[in-house]
Amino acid sequence: MKIIHTISELRATVAEATSAPVFVPTMGNLHEGHLALIRQARGIADQGGWGRGMVVASIFVNRLQFGPNEDFDRYPRTLARDAELLAGAGCDVVFAPDEAELYPEPQGYKVTPPEALANLLEGEFRPGFFTGVCTVVAKLFNIVQPRAAVFGKKDYQQLMVIKGMVRQMAWPIDIVGGDTARADDGLALSSRNGYLSPEERDQAVQLSQALQRVRDLVRAGRAGLPCEGLAKIEAQAMEKLGQQGWVPDYVNIRRQRDLLPPSADELLGSEPLVVVTAAKLGKTRLIDNLEV
Image (tube, rainbow, N blue to C red; front, side, top):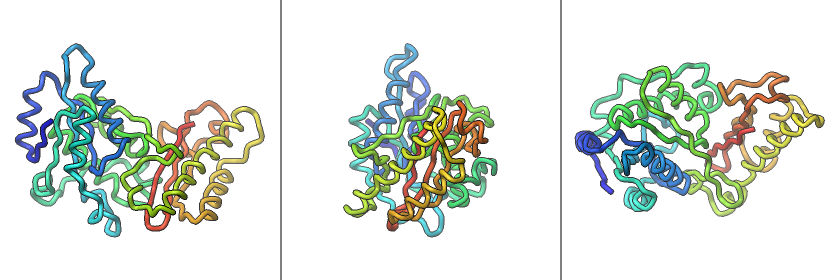
């Protein structure tokens, strides 16, 4: 596996491949969820009769998607460990540029996603976040020139935003979602889980349990059992998390296709839904979701 730090070397390496690579962008500090995405990319890369394809992973902590009071400076940088894990998962190339390489001058040109999708949920609580995400992903796509890219479903809204950007820009890239990897107790794996104290880690499973309760209520309603309305289900979930010591930003039931609230008929019908949440435990903010 090659570790590459410059755009010119990365482009030269990709040009030697027999087919366009499959790409997995990350911010490093990898866990099993990232490695599952690499293995998924490995399977895609080896399809199509070209033999062993190329899998490229990037490691870059993107300043543009962090707010002024967020954890950019303390976000763990663990390149040596990450490279070992990526090699074991089947990655061929790690692109690990420093900030001066990817942003040699202030990034005045940015990709701004539509407000209807980017300003709700995470966008409401992290203004500018998805502009930062879209800008760096667009730049990485331009550098790597992949035929497919794999993103985790844990960042559900991010996956939707990236899919929309690729569709509207008419880029020939297949955006593939990877299922959320979870610990044995159900906690979604996240690089930020490392911020949790041992006591908070034990408590953190309450977030996925809250999602499961909401999903069960929706499923019960769809099975013909009594079901509260949308607003009451969400409010009860927020209240429960608050009683358990969390500071929730949102617990919402949304349509999978556009992340807008479902109508009463859609809530109890067959419309594909997703339950999304973000909440802070101590100083650590976690997100999670479950599809319905």
